[in-house]
Structures are given as structure tokens and as C-alpha cells.
Amino acid sequence: MSQPALPDFIQPGHKIVMFDAVCKLCTGWSRFLIRHDVLEKFKLCSVQSPQGQAILKSLGMPTDHFDTMLLIEGHQVYERSDALLRIMQQLPFPFSVLAAGRIIPKAWRDWAYDQVASRRYTLFGQHAQCMAPTLQIRKRFLDHAI
Image (cartoon, rainbow, N blue to C red; front, side, top):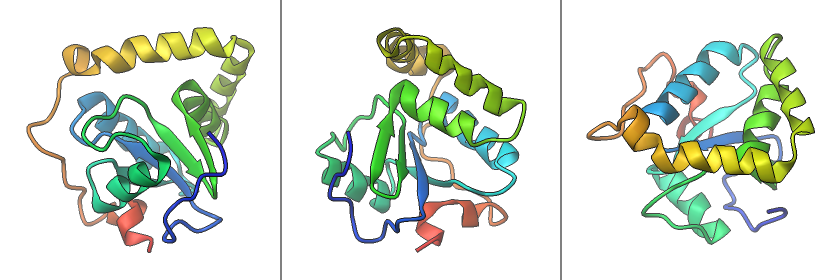
């Protein structure tokens, strides 16, 4: 995907990581980003939030289920393994080295990504409701960046 008509609250400098806040794997990923994105390059946005729902609608994606991670940089949208590798590339060493995974053909990367994504609730579980971030990390979420 590229150059979609995204909601006005997304600014050109935003780097937004969309995640499923009910999924334990996905919330673990968001905690990992909060801990290791020391320069605070990324804003987090749950797909269940009003902002997340607006973004999904603007992209023509389902709003009642979510099977992929998205990275939105300005008006460029990355998904699946491309999103993961692009995020890793922008994290500090040693995580940035993992972006070398781009040498693996995209079809293989996305197949592996889809295998985990489609089984994430079975493998990792899910929360009964979306987890609320602490006051200390609220600024890392999109709804506090606008």
C-alpha cells in the first residue's frame, strides 16, 4: 500500500505503529517498542481506539478484526514483514541488525508472518479487554500526540 488518503490527524512526521491491543503478542510488541525506542520515534495506536478505527476505515481495512501490523510513516503505509523490518531498522543496535531480514524474499517473510499472525491468540492468548497504558507512557500513544 502507498499514498492512501489518511485522516487529517496524521502529520507528515508521524511514525505510527498500529497494533491489536487485545492480543498478548501485540501488546508485548508495543512494550518492547516503548522500552527500546529510546529516541521515541514511534507513536503507538491500537486498532481498537477511535484513531485506529479511523485509520483502518481510511485504508479500506476491516475494523472488526485485524490480522496484520501496520507502520504509517507520513503517508506511506507498510504492513506485515515490511512493517516489522522497517521498524527494526530504526531501532538502536543490536535490533537494527535484524533489518537484514530483507534479504529473505518478501513472499517467504510474509508467509512466516501470516503463520504467526493467524495463530497469535492460540499461541500467546488475548486480554479480555484492551490494556490501558500507564500515565507514564500515555505520551507514546497517538491519541496523546494530536
